[in-house]
Image (tube, rainbow, N blue to C red; front, side, top):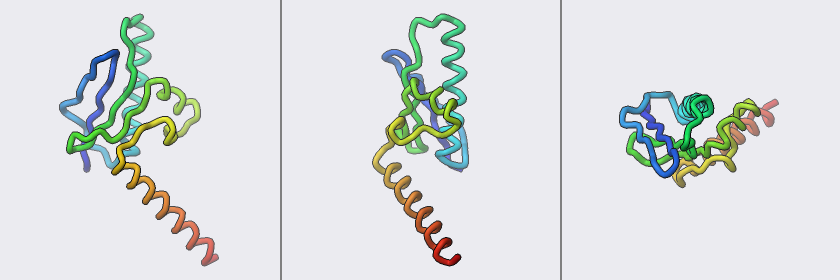
Amino acid sequence: MPRFYIHFRTGDQIARDDVGIELPGLEEAIETTLLSAREIIADEIKGNAKTHLRAIIIAGESGQDLLTIPARDVFRSALKSEMPSSRQITASPSIRNEMALMVLAASTIAGNRSAQS
Protein backbone atom coordinates (compact mmCIF):
# COMPACT_ATOMS: atom_id res chain seq x y z
CA MET A 1 0.00 0.00 0.00
CA PRO A 2 1.18 3.54 -0.67
CA ARG A 3 2.30 5.74 2.21
CA PHE A 4 0.82 9.20 2.61
CA TYR A 5 2.08 12.06 4.77
CA ILE A 6 -0.38 14.53 6.27
CA HIS A 7 1.08 17.96 7.03
CA PHE A 8 -0.77 20.72 8.86
CA ARG A 9 -0.28 24.44 8.17
CA THR A 10 -1.01 26.53 11.26
CA GLY A 11 -0.30 30.22 11.09
CA ASP A 12 3.00 30.56 9.23
CA GLN A 13 4.30 27.14 10.31
CA ILE A 14 3.91 23.68 8.76
CA ALA A 15 3.88 20.66 11.07
CA ARG A 16 5.36 17.92 8.90
CA ASP A 17 4.39 14.28 9.26
CA ASP A 18 7.65 12.31 9.26
CA VAL A 19 6.04 8.90 9.82
CA GLY A 20 3.16 8.78 7.35
CA ILE A 21 0.36 6.27 7.10
CA GLU A 22 -0.21 3.41 4.69
CA LEU A 23 -3.60 3.62 3.00
CA PRO A 24 -5.11 1.95 -0.06
CA GLY A 25 -5.33 5.17 -2.06
CA LEU A 26 -5.76 8.91 -2.26
CA GLU A 27 -9.48 8.79 -1.45
CA GLU A 28 -8.76 7.10 1.89
CA ALA A 29 -5.97 9.61 2.54
CA ILE A 30 -8.45 12.46 2.03
CA GLU A 31 -10.97 10.85 4.39
CA THR A 32 -8.29 10.31 7.06
CA THR A 33 -7.03 13.86 6.61
CA LEU A 34 -10.49 15.38 7.00
CA LEU A 35 -11.15 13.41 10.20
CA SER A 36 -7.83 14.52 11.71
CA ALA A 37 -8.41 18.13 10.69
CA ARG A 38 -11.87 18.17 12.28
CA GLU A 39 -10.39 16.92 15.57
CA ILE A 40 -7.65 19.58 15.46
CA ILE A 41 -10.15 22.37 14.77
CA ALA A 42 -12.41 21.15 17.61
CA ASP A 43 -9.41 21.17 19.99
CA GLU A 44 -8.50 24.70 18.83
CA ILE A 45 -12.02 25.90 19.59
CA LYS A 46 -12.11 24.19 23.01
CA GLY A 47 -8.67 25.50 23.95
CA ASN A 48 -9.21 29.01 22.57
CA ALA A 49 -6.05 28.64 20.44
CA LYS A 50 -4.18 31.77 19.36
CA THR A 51 -3.18 30.28 15.99
CA HIS A 52 -5.51 28.23 13.86
CA LEU A 53 -5.26 25.49 11.27
CA ARG A 54 -5.09 27.09 7.83
CA ALA A 55 -4.65 24.09 5.54
CA ILE A 56 -3.93 20.38 5.39
CA ILE A 57 -1.42 19.06 2.89
CA ILE A 58 -1.36 15.45 1.71
CA ALA A 59 2.01 14.34 0.36
CA GLY A 60 2.91 11.11 -1.39
CA GLU A 61 5.72 8.65 -0.77
CA SER A 62 8.18 10.73 -2.76
CA GLY A 63 7.43 13.77 -0.59
CA GLN A 64 5.58 15.55 -3.39
CA ASP A 65 2.51 17.52 -2.25
CA LEU A 66 -0.55 15.86 -3.80
CA LEU A 67 -3.41 17.92 -2.36
CA THR A 68 -3.91 21.00 -0.25
CA ILE A 69 -7.26 21.33 1.53
CA PRO A 70 -8.02 24.75 3.06
CA ALA A 71 -9.23 24.47 6.66
CA ARG A 72 -12.42 26.38 5.79
CA ASP A 73 -13.45 23.42 3.59
CA VAL A 74 -12.98 20.73 6.24
CA PHE A 75 -16.49 20.96 7.69
CA ARG A 76 -18.13 21.93 4.42
CA SER A 77 -17.41 18.48 3.01
CA ALA A 78 -18.79 16.81 6.16
CA LEU A 79 -22.02 18.80 5.95
CA LYS A 80 -22.44 17.83 2.31
CA SER A 81 -21.50 14.19 3.12
CA GLU A 82 -19.15 14.11 0.17
CA MET A 83 -15.52 14.57 -0.70
CA PRO A 84 -14.24 18.10 -1.35
CA SER A 85 -14.86 19.24 -4.91
CA SER A 86 -12.03 20.07 -7.27
CA ARG A 87 -12.68 23.76 -6.51
CA GLN A 88 -11.94 23.15 -2.83
CA ILE A 89 -8.64 21.34 -3.20
CA THR A 90 -5.47 22.03 -5.11
CA ALA A 91 -3.95 19.01 -6.79
CA SER A 92 -0.55 18.67 -8.37
CA PRO A 93 -0.57 18.42 -12.21
CA SER A 94 0.22 14.69 -12.16
CA ILE A 95 -2.65 13.99 -9.76
CA ARG A 96 -5.04 16.13 -11.86
CA ASN A 97 -4.08 14.08 -14.93
CA GLU A 98 -4.60 10.82 -13.01
CA MET A 99 -8.01 12.01 -11.78
CA ALA A 100 -9.02 13.06 -15.29
CA LEU A 101 -8.06 9.63 -16.62
CA MET A 102 -10.11 7.92 -13.90
CA VAL A 103 -13.15 10.04 -14.74
CA LEU A 104 -12.70 9.33 -18.45
CA ALA A 105 -12.37 5.58 -17.81
CA ALA A 106 -15.48 5.56 -15.59
CA SER A 107 -17.56 7.44 -18.17
CA THR A 108 -16.32 5.12 -20.94
CA ILE A 109 -17.27 2.05 -18.91
CA ALA A 110 -20.69 3.55 -18.12
CA GLY A 111 -21.20 4.37 -21.81
CA ASN A 112 -20.25 0.84 -22.87
CA ARG A 113 -22.69 -0.67 -20.35
CA SER A 114 -25.60 1.44 -21.54
CA ALA A 115 -24.77 0.63 -25.18
CA GLN A 116 -24.87 -3.10 -24.37
CA SER A 117 -28.28 -2.82 -22.66
